[in-house]
Image (cartoon, rainbow, N blue to C red; front, side):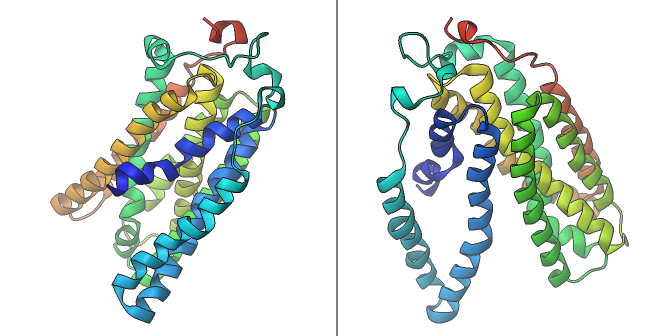
Length: 298
């Protein structure tokens, strides 16, 4: 039930409205919007921990539930809306004022939809388990869980930086050309995280690069869905492309855990992830130029 209902609070909901308001600086706008999920990931656990200390684990549920009820809902009701036709960027609509864009069925008939879907799936499989198992990966290098938690904080900083910096770059350059090197960064991170006895500084660099790519991936889905498929059916298309991200992120921790149980370390999965990140990024280079308005109206 949480997954079914809570999906409405994910970027799938907010990205459409943000993309409708912005064109020239859409990448930056989406990056700033997505930063909030990282901030919540750092702040909400602290609030939940305080609630547990005050009244036990049962108190954490109503306390955390009050955040969307008393904070997010009033803000959304007061200010969250899509632009009126006269407020939209001119590039989003045709001469009649109707939004341009492909339907989900039309998008699925083209190769770009499937390239994006496979790229997102490969990247999610590579990243999800590395994040979830990060503490154990660092412990295998001879450090304490406390030090490993500090590396997780560096991962969070990488996510913040990736979302904003990649968003800015998307506004200035061809987005797939930006995304490809961004997806190579976690390949370097996986190499740094392999083995044991690695210096803490190298592990922290690896954590930052891994987080940077995770932030970039969120921008990739939201930005490229708007650029290549238009805004008319953006919600359906983005939702369809977000699905492999969720599936891959769910499968990945299991795969990392199976490799750890079988071999005693994560090296085999980290080596596999290097190839997954590189392949997922390289696939984006096949997307070609952005479609013009007339092509999105077909």
